[in-house]
Length: 342
Length: 178
Image (cartoon, each protein chain N blue to C red):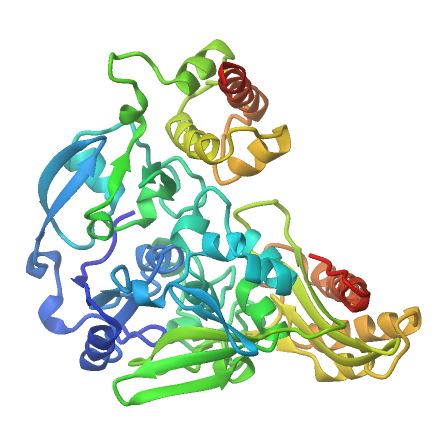
């Protein structure tokens, strides 16, 4: 498959990149690893006039601790996260999510964490070649007025299948965006619009430059779970991230996230609240939270990924439960004196 | 037609004739090549069409199968998803570059032959490149490690067992040589 014609820009630093994005706002796409963008360009899902390559922006390739935060540059390749002691020690959920993106032999060396965060929402009826799609009228995500995933839907029902986004939301990340007009930092929930047609809150002239994660304290733990048919090169049919904090034998804080359901990873407030205040041995509370997670996620799911809808709905509860249980184990490992579980 | 947040190409860029070619210097298998390519050409296209290095194969063209795997500075990348312009200044190794200087086959190539690991053969250049990069980083792998290491490469003949055996044999032999 050939790529559409495009002009290639190579900014030497972040300032130049932002100027190019501002100068060509709406007509330029940011090229980091390209493992998602190039495919979508080949399929003519996006035809930017300009590609702004980030290959010289080594200043955005870092993982370091800044006081109570761990900050990750947006252009950091996935392999660097996998090999980072900071990430392995504090965020096993993120380490696992990154390991499961694409395939270890390939995407990890090209793919970047910022690129994975910005992964476009996907749908079986949209992520197809131009020829495949030419047989019928365009869908909502393709500027049309039809949804092939759900009859009579007035909006796009594509799903966010990014493993990185699901994990980062569970970990309470903030996303730093920059443009020539200045910078802003959004809680990750606000970085996603929840709208399939345009799932990211980034403006066309904005560049994601950094991801900030709070360093977990004592008694905190996190876990990521992903359901796929294949063990590599597969998107999540449904995924879950849990972050929990335990104090004196009781759960004092919880964030439960389901991915692969809606146009944004879903931060499930009600399901999380079912855990707060409960004893760490309370198996019933975990079941209740998982049930609530399934109810909530089911409302967003339609039959548009590579598995039946009913199976994905059922498995959303299973993924949620596994994530909570593993996170809980890690909380307990983390509060034992001297012990820290990877 | 505008899609996503990208409003599409402006009128003046319609048609590939208006695309400016860019001069590139590509280092492939230790040789410098000066080429002039349109920015929308992938590394795979330039390798096969401009440099006649046809050992690298295109299969899916979407980054799913791994047939087009080449090494960039020793790391495996999918050449079908990498613009040629992105790899300027890097060292590219294709399957042609695996062969040792005296013309002998790489240990992996010989092992693939000895184990009968090649069926139709279309995935093999990609398999070899992934396996070479994997072994360079993990000289002492378990079978499970190898399976994970080549999990980005699809063999449509499903001949994975012998491929894994062939890689394992090379790993063992390099260890015994110390």
